Image (cartoon, one colour):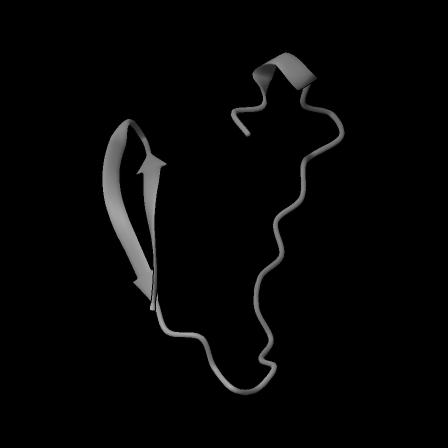
Length: 42
């Protein structure tokens, strides 16, 4: 099990998950090109 400290809207919380033994469909995040680099939090 992996654990990561995650921040969202100024709140911090632990996120944990169990890896699967198979590939599954999931969301993929990508930057919006119209958002300037200095406005991106990541």
